[in-house]
Length: 234
Image 1 (cartoon, rainbow, N blue to C red):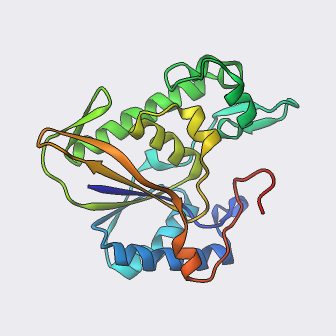
Image 2: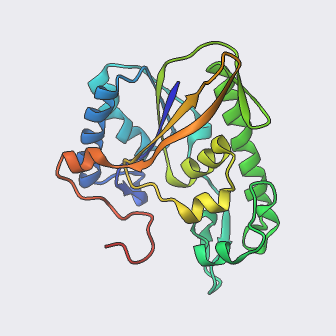
């Protein structure tokens, strides 16, 4: 099985939709998903994800399923070095990399910038929903690896968001969440590809084939939106 974790196109956050530029991105993305021969579509309930997804749905003719757990993370708030409120995934990388030993996905919520019960409980909820989603697809998580309950060679497109997408990716890959937040960025309309790497009949392990790929934008002669990058994007 392959999972395509797709961030919504260039956002108009105020109106929870996508910008004119975002519509062009979503069209280019739809062409890519058609070539990928995806089998099913899942989507966040938020309109910026739905409006991005609609182009792929219309071009492929596939039905889609909205799942609430794919919505962008809410209330995972902390503060920056000047005391201003920010989403947890925007904590400065220099702070995260300065801790020794590095924080893990199991203890990061004990560090001061992340010491918000909503963060700890929210990540636990994402993990739980992910495990149910994967088991429904035929893969039962058992301490980081996935027991194959039934063979699955389907390609699944999941339209969601950056903060959520990186949190889900951290769980799938068994990687420290703060490191994903500070070390990766998902551009609007980007595609992150996960392969369920099955080297035996019993077990599969999620393997990332690419993070935040925007080749469909280059193919369509579109530039990459900097939404979500806070500094020095050239």
